[in-house]
Image (cartoon, rainbow, N blue to C red; front, side):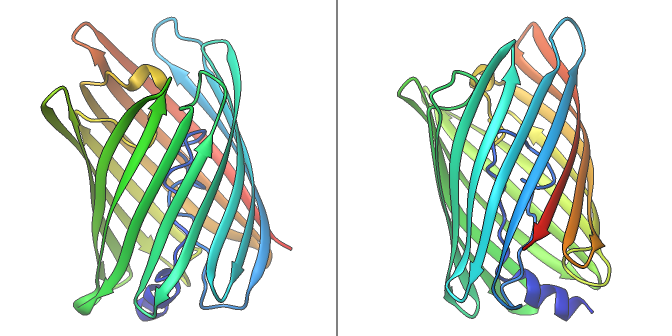
Length: 268
């Protein structure tokens, strides 16, 4: 079965960059280009609860997916209520095919609200390697009031039986100092690439793509999450995430949060 999963995941739409969510839909929800072309709509809701006196955050997104022989393309509108402020962000993701073993990821987004980056850009190249390995390399840039936050990233993944393991770092140079954060993911796949149960652990001192304006000064983060994806009907896919994060925004300010996310994707 793992060969089927690897084949169907080769052209993954891996939207790790949805800044309105940090969620299951945003964390590598798959559109399998090995199947017939299709169009789908997706929606997601997140609730973030904090320790201390920080008000909860409420996050949502709606997206339109389109898959063709050229690749997968996603248009998304994100909404967030953070710090008693509302905001909307628009994003576009593209996963064009390059060859039978390689594809690209390109992302762009804009928001006029202070709860999102004003601009965000991303690019990454993915390839399948011998021995059930895969690798990628890319860059992300987020701009807050015109000031860019640039991160180098990439991933190394390995399939072992019905399991998949991935290591992804984010590296940033700021004021002459280099900092890094690493995310380790593990998944257990079941009958196909849409049915899985996973866990992820994040640790380091650099922002990831889940960055918010107040987290630009992040000095250390530790997070753990469990997530899953399963078909509810032949056309309806359900996703979920439960996560806990501890973020040190300054030497005397550590913020803890619990995130609960649920999403649906329906093929038209």
